Image (cartoon, rainbow, N blue to C red; front, side, top):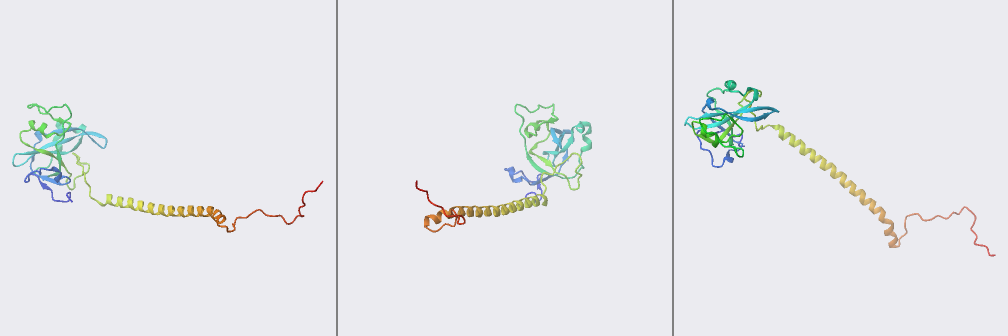
Amino acid sequence: DRWRQEPFDLANNPLPDDLHELEYRRVQVEGVFDYDHQILLTNQIHSGAPGVNLITPLVMEDGRAVLVARGWIPVNRATPDQWSQFEEPPGAPVIGLIQESQLLPNGSAPPVPPSPQVEWYTLNIDAIQPQMPYPLLPVFILQLPEDGRSRNAFPFRAEPIVLDEGAHFSYAIQWFMFAVILGVGYIFFIRAQELREQRIAGTLQPAAESESGMPSSAPGPQTDLSGPPTTGPSHA
C-alpha cells in the first residue's frame, strides 16, 4: 500500500521523526545535481562484477541538499574523467527510497577539509557533511529507475520492490501442492491404520474365543482313518 501511494514530497515536507513511516514509501525531490561535489561508494558488486555507486548531492531550492545514490557503474568506468557521461537530464525530479545514514567503520575518522574525500566505504552523513558547502539532510535517497529506462543503462538502478503476479502465483502453486500432499498422505495414513487394526484383530481373535469357552476356528490335529487300527502293546 505504501509503495502505491503518491511519492512523499521531500522538499516541501519535513522528515517524520520516525523514518519507519517512510519505509517502502517512495519519495520525490526536485533540485539541481552538484557534480563538483560528487563522491563514490566503493566496493559495490553487481552480478559478480566490481564497481562503485555514484553519490551526488541534489541541492534544493531552499539551499539544503540531499545525497542521492544514483546507481552502479563498473570499476573501469569510475575514473573522474568519465563521470560526465553519467549526468542526469536537468529538470527531472528524483524519485527514490529514503535510506538512513550508515555507520562508519570502527576506528575510522571523518576527513578534515580542505582535503575532501572522494571514495567512501559507507555513507555516513555526519562524516561527509564537513566537505559539503551546504547543509545535508540526515538521510540519503536510493534513486529508482525511471519509467522506460533501459535495464542496461548506467548508472544501473535496481528496482528493490516488484509488485506483479509472479510471486503470488508461485506461492499459490506451492500451497496447493502442500494441500495435495497432505490430502494424499492423510488417505494413506488412514488406510495404514485400518490395515494395522485388522491385523491386530485377526491375531487376538483365537485367544479371545478360547477364554470364552467357544470353539476355535483354528484347525486341530487330524486322525488318519484310512489305515488299520492301532493295537496296544503286547504282553510278554
